[in-house]
Length: 131
Image (cartoon, rainbow, N blue to C red; front, top):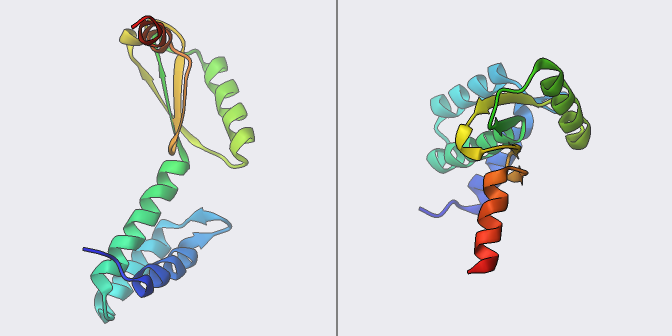
């Protein structure tokens, strides 16, 4: 189903109302969704779908996934958090995962940005060059 311009515009306006000091406020999101569900304006399903997509994107942009071959110590985690927060200009919530198949290095994903400095990625790049 194609979302109408009016529904996308309304969803953007509602999304802006969900922000408090540039951060998503869960209580406001719930309140706004409840209001839309109660009043059921024309195209409310498309409005809510568009609003959901915007909220999902915002949440992904505020979260960083860090994967490493071995567990990172507390100092490395805090340094990584500080440098990512500085780069993005806002506080990020970091999730750390250990994946031995990476062999070494780390992979960081923030929203749609991915930095892959793993040994596995380097080996795959070399393999692609040789093929």
